[in-house]
Image 1 (tube, helix red, strand yellow):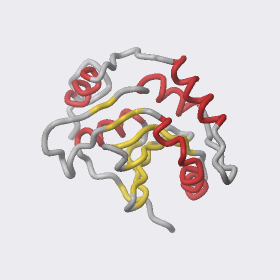
Image 2 (spheres, rainbow, N blue to C red):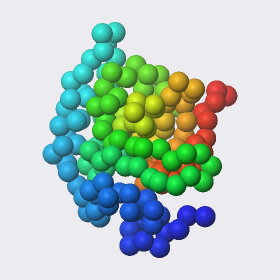
Image 3 (cartoon, rainbow, N blue to C red):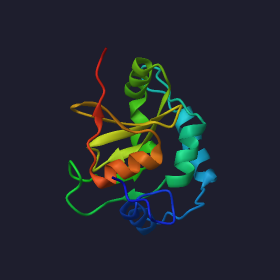
Image 4 (cartoon, rainbow, N blue to C red):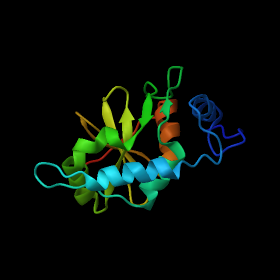
Length: 163
């Protein structure tokens, strides 16, 4: 059960981690988000792959971009993750993210990473968050808020599988 008794939409421990990283309700750095969007749109991989940029991604970057979050404690099911919200950490993964997007029949944009490059975090058109690591692709949450809560509380993500 998630304790949502804080003054924000996040569980108490997640709210504390967010505020400790510099987040506050109403945070909105659209200038930085647009700079990231421009950088991602301009990047073309050597094989010609490009990033998708769309409102759900830009909104997530505007609210949470630049934050480095960590949680203490054992986690509910797995160890809590440290999260870096910075889409440029996925700059060179346009093909990988494009492949995942095609498999899910959506568009995917980079969101950041877990740990020290342990996994890349990505967001889709609907705002759902995914994690990609050397073991596979994972569904983390229905939106950035739920994904941050899952990562910081140590909730086990759902492995994506082929039909």
